[in-house]
Image (cartoon, rainbow, N blue to C red; front, side, top):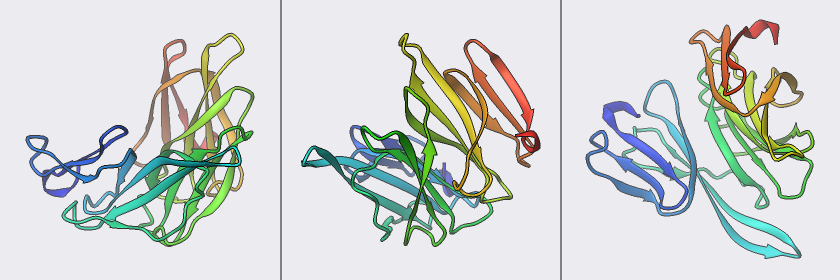
Amino acid sequence: LLAGGVVTSAQQVEGLAQSPDRGCSWSFVAKKSAIDVARSPDGLTAIAVTNVYASTDAGTLLYDTQMLETTNAGKSWSPLSGAIDPRLVIDTIDLAPSDSQRMYVTGHVYQTPNGTMLVSSDGGQSWLARAIPFTTGETNAFIAAVDPTNADVVYARTLGTSSTTEQFSRLLVTKGAGQTWNEAWKGDKLLGFALSADGSRIYVGTALAGLLAANASDL
């Protein structure tokens, strides 16, 4: 939800949709598979990403990825110029609440052992790729939250399938913008995550473990 009641929705089948009247009417900003959308605290700035299969080259799947940005609550959207690795399948994007220039993207390249986090410190003009360490069976990493006061602190939840076909997750945290990662929790599939407004407490929920809470400083 952007300023003025503008609703933006990322739809993998139809594209990036937007409603100026809280969902009563809709139009498309981009008619390409839209993976995710994230907004800044001011409600004026938001970024979105489209990620569409383009071709296969020597057995490598290639994707057409475009990052879009609005700085006026959806009145207009413009593409960001930073190049994205065409092999990357995008999972999530997010903005750092404390730094308007810091952006994060997570994704994965098929048949590679790790996930990828892209980090931009210049508002999407350039991106630095950093590895997200996967364990056996993991295939995806989703940004759960960016700390509200420290742009370098990011929480990510993974998703994988065990040898017995059961889904599982880990909660990872980086305090260096993806340079290193610590495993904060592991168990059955994560169904929910929340970070307190001041970033001091985290909450996770799963079907088997229930609701768990921890101090962010302990991770």
